[in-house]
Amino acid sequence: MRCRRCGEKAEIYLKRHNTAFCSSCFQVYYSEQVKRNIKREKMFKPNDRILVVVSGGKDSMALWHILLKLGYNVTGMYINLGICGYSDRSQEVVERYSQANNAPVIIKNIEKEYGFSIPALAREIRRSTCSLCGTIKRYLFNKVALDGGFDAVATGHNLDDEAATLLGNVLSWQEGYLARQSPVLPSTHPKLVKKVKPLYTLTERENLAYVLFNGIEFIHEECPHALGASSILYKEILNKLEDESPGTKQRFLTNFYKKGKKFFEKYSEPVKLNECKICGQVTTAEICSFCRLRQMAEKKKVDSMPQEGEDF
Ligand code: SF4
Ligand code: ZN
Image (cartoon, protein in one colour):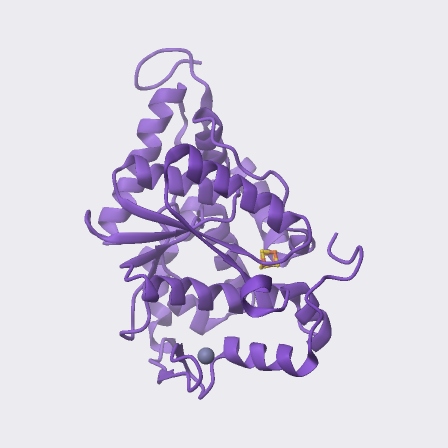
């Protein structure tokens, strides 16, 4: 098979576009997609300061790399969640990339800075590790971006992630979530920083190809807490549909934005936002979820060390 752009030997076939590229033409296709997404969705301007959330996985490493390559003013941000083994290994990947590419990165360590680990607190207060993790990550993304004067927080969500989220929201008819799902979550309060997803039209496989073609190191293992997540099942179902009918995932997501989303707009009621009485961050309550978690950790005196073997 030949590359559609240059006629050289193709190295990747994109079934949904019925086209094939050599590695260098694939990178042109990839960067055009990212540039188009940023422009079409007005994600950020050329001189904006962007905080890129990096986990060490292929998607966020691809995003960090492409935004730097496109000349944006980018700083990485890594949060060490205290997930036994996995967090330290992924932090090393991020630090090596930062050093090798002279790319600034901000590292946050929950255990060192706040005195508790997410798995230990989740056990103690009988909540799911992922729900705590989501709360803490959202809080820190916004706080670090706000304190550092960043214009936007960029995440590596890809087409597979976004289509799986959409499928989950449709299956349970979550009108509010459907109204809010978007490649850009605008700032609705002076203390809320805009969130953007520049890779939302690129698949996991395309991000993997991008990091492999560029020799970018990434952590291959998944977070151990991801096992059994419903999003994995939705991705598998969508992949089966995609195999039978290439382009299904993209049509599902982009046609939702073009045709379906407008029917849910009435469910996107503006919520009253307050500033947390303890930390000043935005919340719908008097005290934000993060500060409440910190209070719980303090009350329970959560042992910051995960118990033996529980996180694998
Ligand atoms: Fe956090 Fe891991 Fe759950 Fe993802 S899978 S939300 S990183 S605990
Ligand atoms: Zn707070």
